[in-house]
Amino acid sequence: MSNNSNELLGECLFGKVRRKVLSTFVLNPDRSFYLLELIRFLECGRGAVQREVSRLAKAGIITRTRVGNQVHYTTNTDNLIYKELKSIFSKTTGLLELLGADLQNCTDKLGMAFIYGDYANGTAGENSTVDLMVIGDTTMDAVRSCTAAFSTEAARELHITVLAVAELKRRLLSNQSLIKDILADKKIFLCGGHRELQLLSTTGDDLFAGIF
Image 1 (cartoon, one colour):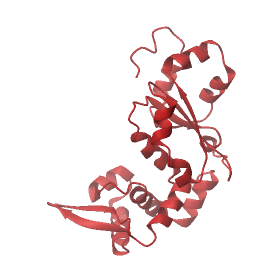
Image 2: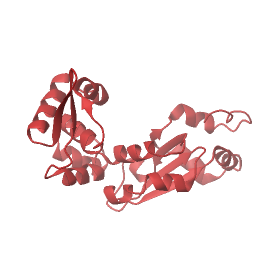
Image 3: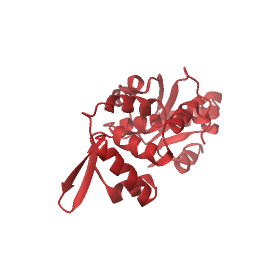
């Protein structure tokens, strides 16, 4: 069980599989899923996912549509409680999924993006900001544009840091304590991963070429 108070709220309100199924549909209202695709996506048992999908369809929270030989399911955004469900998942267990989906819509190539600070450490309180670092060939304006709705939907302030690879290298070479502390602390990756970060954190002359 999570130590993060926001995620604990979601765990208390919904069972594990229902929480995963609901948040997937509610936070991806423009996407449709067929059952096997959803099972692979959620990495949950077939029977459990099938039961939840059937219940949600009967309740009118998702809609069922046959496309050829497949049955596809989509979010019913006209459902009476859709907005309330989206608000719940945006502020609790779906917060990272919501931010990740926003970043996927960014027109620039992000390279690497991760959450650090209180939320990554599981110590976020009611007024904690979500600290996002983006490393790559993009701009602050581009990242702000694709995450513009996040703070409202998640009821969380988003603090963004954007660094070009060359700037990250310069700060590491100058032994800047803030960036070194961030890189050494816990992180939740939204783009990229530990391998790429390890390469970026090594200050050799040629290690940065062609990474992004």
